[in-house]
Amino acid sequence: MKLRAQAYSKVNLFLGVGPRRDDGFHELSTIFQSLSLNDEVTLRTEGSQPHTGAWVKGLKVRGLAHNEVPEDQSNLAWKAVTAVVNAYSSEGYVPHQTVHLDIRKGIPVAGGMAGGSADAAAALLLADRWLSTVHQVPGLGEERLLAIAAELGSDVPFSLLGGTQRGEGRGEKLSAVANSTRWWWVIALSRIGLSTPKVFHTLDHLRDTQQIAPPQLDCSGIIAALASGDPLKLAAELHNDLAAPALALQPALRRTLEAGTEAGALSGIISGSGPTCAFLCHDRTHADAVAARLRDSQVADTIVTAYGPAGGAEILE
Ligand code: ATP
Image 1 (spheres, rainbow, N blue to C red):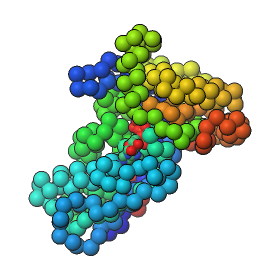
Image 2 (image 1 turned 90 degrees about the vertical axis):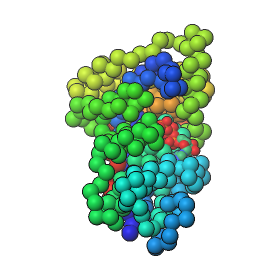
Image 3 (image 1 turned 60 degrees about the vertical axis):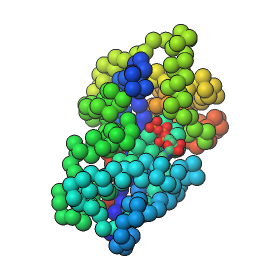
């Protein structure tokens, strides 16, 4: 059996970070939007070898920055398959085969665009389809998959659903946000990634030493702007509490943000924990023009255009 699935990247249109909780995570108030930049994951069953340990027998990564992605059990897609196998096995549906995973990366690695989470979401769907087909039982269903996703990582539930969603808690408590507009973005990718835990740690440090504005958690302005369909209104509401620590760790990003607005973008933000920067544009033609100017300014390694919202993870039939 060979199955393919696609999953999309994300940008946080709004990312408010509350205080650190006792479990080490921060309480978030965020608005996610999935973007058309995507990864593809393929699951292949490998004959009917008896089970000798890991259900995933191998994993190969190709594409964008593929050599920075682990090809072992620490890969989030591998973990996702294992979690689904465990869920089926706990009900007596043990697989008779092992699988091999192939990942084609189109989402930058450690770019604040939830690339690993996208692969995990795609792998959850693939493993669910594989085992429900083999055992001729219904799939796990959205609720169960979302619960497994939340255990794999804070952004994995969003990667499963896609679209435009409000995220609370660690970002795993989702509710759909009304949006009927396709928004166009220019994305500036940097080859040097930023570690998400390090960015949060720096935020705590800046807050402890009072070098930073207080958290901004009210995302009602962005929700109204999304409903209006007006890019100028949305541009005015984009916000990221992680921008200050990301800029403290990578000061050159300030120049990237400036270059985006100089190139004519309506507004720019650091995506999630960075270092990817996302620039909102009026429409596709405007995005193409901004991207061309930004390429000339040479502030980022790669410049691409993307639209949002894209979908959630999906099996490619
Ligand atoms: P987020 O936006 O959710 O904070 P990110 O986009 O900044 O995440 P990822 O690309 O998801 O970061 O990767 C972060 C780290 O996770 C990588 O440096 C890599 O070592 C590890 N990783 C594990 N599995 C994957 C995967 N399938 N794809 C990419 N990175 C992975």
